Figure 1 (cartoon, rainbow, N blue to C red):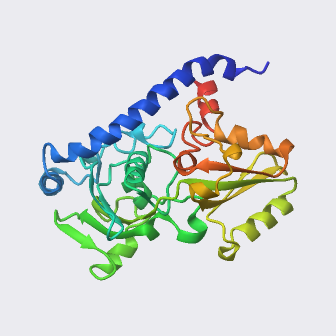
Figure 2: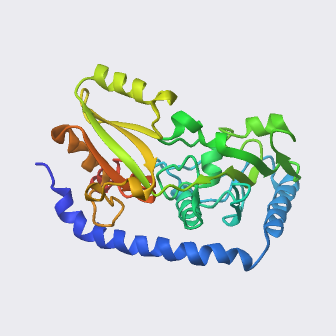
Length: 322
């Protein structure tokens, strides 16, 4: 017997979604100015250095890792590899500076992409690559690799990183960019923390354009889906965003987007999909298998977080499993 999970969980999840959205909004305002309180960035980095130096005498041969608990991992696996390791506390979660003249932002690695992007948008800028899950950290996107629907133009997350600051295993603070320690700069992405503890990242910015003109194209064979993706992901296509979701072995919806200013928006086709009561994105996209090709206009910030509430298409599986 199939369980109608939506009937039972939606009355609970919808109010929680609304409350969560309010928390996110106010945390941006409070969190950004909190960087002026307490210890400075340099003092917090010194704390990491001190812990690494202590490890050299107190580690007893154990490997180091961050003290971030495993339950905060994106993976749903039970991770126990940290239990026997020497844990280093990394208390670095602030946005240090938004420079809209040089179009860069300096940010600490424990800052989440959801917090950072909302703050950037309030300053009229955003990142060229904005991974969709709010709770992904900047450090994780660098060390573990980040990707988004704009990556056919801008590459992976490390391709918008201009500079890294790390504490290496000897306890020293090291700067890595294209001119200084270039070999380390190129090695940090996908290194999963093996080369040092990341303490600061400098990222490229791009102007924030308020809407995305989004086209949904249903396909009904693997060959058709592949052909559409191959054509639309070509840089010469003019698409700012390209994404596809396979729903069965043969059915898919390919989505292409172009960032547009408000004066180019057809008001009757606006979809504010980020509102707390809106359907989960992947379930909404599936409806276009029946509707056919459709164009609508989505507020860019809503588009950035489109997969956040359903965690792509995994949330209902987690709920049923629990």
